[in-house]
Image (cartoon, rainbow, N blue to C red):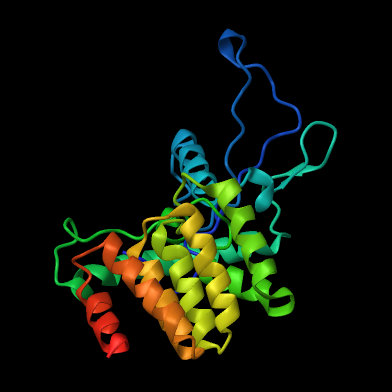
Length: 251
């Protein structure tokens, strides 16, 4: 289940840990483990190993390192894990409380028992990125000042970096949604640019040709629209919608 659009599901580090600057050796020559301090969301009596495991899971879900929320500069730098000065830590605590509240209310909302209901967690929205913004929004924002070329550049940049993961939708549907938004915004040429790019990745996409036909027809280019629909039907003979549209255009 996905949290409402725009939420930053469980932020990185709502739990804070403080490491002593000097550690006295414990029995057996192993360094003593400093106590966890400033725990505000996770119960204060949570075992250290469990806290660290939780932090690692959160960091992985957001695709970040400890210093995203903690003051942690490494060797020779300032390391104050308990500090609350970073805004990201404040946001993280808020998101942990929010997801806790969602998970409490979720079973009743979906009509399932607590055991059967899917729980919301960091990866539910973040999926490997700190700010879980949809790729359609990112590309559209990039195209605001630079047009489709800027939008496509951003799409290709994200695809190069994140393809194979779960962060963004790089399926056939990804650029189709972006093209639909551009077309709805009265930017048919941008929409066609996105659709042409989609054919680079999915040359047998009947849906892409069908949408191209809609854009061409809206521009008054009926021959191009017919050609697009013929290709759409050729690629997917079961595409009844494209077949119907083709028959209507030919009449």
